[in-house]
Length: 85
Image 1 (cartoon, one colour):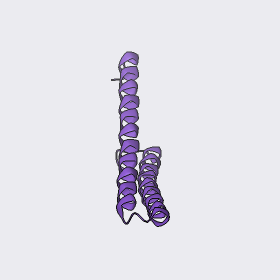
Image 2 (cartoon, rainbow, N blue to C red):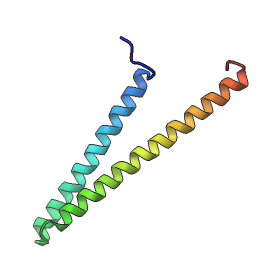
Image 3 (cartoon, rainbow, N blue to C red):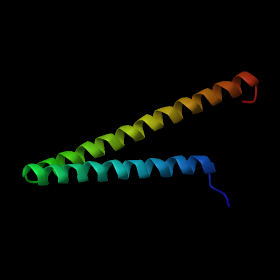
Image 4 (cartoon, helix red, strand yellow):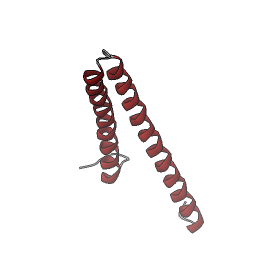
């Protein structure tokens, strides 16, 4: 089965990034909900937790994209050096 321009490892990395993003949002929202219940602060900590989880998830995705881009650039440099380009 052809996976297009992505390898199976790329699909695994992309899927894990999606799961990490979802987990960070859910955990941030849950933590805000629990703190709202203990402190009686209404929905404010829940909303703050959801935003914090979203920000963390987005940071994880940006960091992974940067690492993937760096790895791709290094691979292209190595191929050019070996004369495979």
